[in-house]
Structures are given as structure tokens and as C-alpha cells.
Length: 223
Image (cartoon, rainbow, N blue to C red; front, side):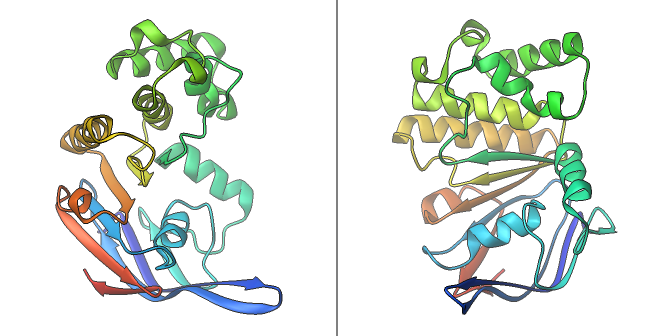
């Protein structure tokens, strides 16, 4: 059974009463343990599709099965629970809280999951240590390089032990060396069994994944 299965997914928005179809009747499957990239130019629908896959947004039409469960029309509380249990997010802009330490940033998903303070601190510390940031646990984001901030973001994504990592342009704000290091980390996570999906407009990044899904104007043109 596919870990992720989309059946005729459509997603529309309304901007000043004008309907915008961001994703058009997409059907695709992704198996557990795959390393996949979703590629397309700005406006192709790739981030919207990632948001549907990540249960940040529900489809306007169609069905989405995540690990065998139809999550297409679940309420926000149910979707939040699924995100916290199954999915880790890595964003281009890092999305770290600027006035709190790396350790506390990584703890946040565990706070929402009501994990006891001692356990969540231990797990957050371990996640940062695994990513080579043992010496940076008490530093604030402004005291870290872009590459270090993205590693903190990856540690935060991993601390809940999700099966799926969704990365939206994870190297977009990094220099080439730091970007390569982040890609290597994502590939290593995939080698350890994580399903990793990377959204990018960069073909050279996509070429480093095992499968490329090309989007254009909200539709899959190559899979």
C-alpha cells in the first residue's frame, strides 16, 4: 500500500472573488522510503500540493489517503494531530522563533504533543546533537549561520520521529556549500528509512533525488 495516495486532487482559492485553480485533478502515489522531488516554476502549484500532502490544507475536490487513512475532509484538530505524529516540515525561511534558543525551538512540537518537560528536553538535545549542533543548543537563531538555522529546523522536524519529511525549497536561502550539506542530511535521513519529499524549482537539486514529479500549471506533466 502507498504511504501517500492522491486521487483527482483539486485545490482552488478565491482572490477578490476570482477563482484560482492552484492544483488540477492530480493523482499520484508515493511509497514509504522514497526520496522524491516536486519540481516546477513559480505558480506551478508545487507548494500548494505540498501543503495538501502535509495536511496543512484540505483539497477542494478529490481524496487523499495518508497511510491508508482518508484525511481529505478531517477537521483542523484531527489534521493537527496527524501532522504532529507523522510529518516533519522544513521550510526555506527556517521558521524559527527568533527570541528563543535552538533547544527550545526544537522542543516546540513536543510541547504541542504534551510530552513531559524532561523527556522533550532530552529528545530535543539528542536531535541537535545528531545534526552536529551540540555546541549551539543555547544559541538564538540570530547567532547562527543560515546552514545552522536550517539544521535546527531539521532537528525540529525530526524530534517527533515522523515517517515523512516535507522540505519546501530547503536550500533556497543558503549558499551553495550549506545547501549541499542540507541535501546530504536529507539523503541520509532517507537512507535511514524516512520518506523525504523536496519541493524545488532547481533541477540540479531534483537530480539528486530518486524520483522527480514535474508540475506545470497545477498539473503533473511527468512523474
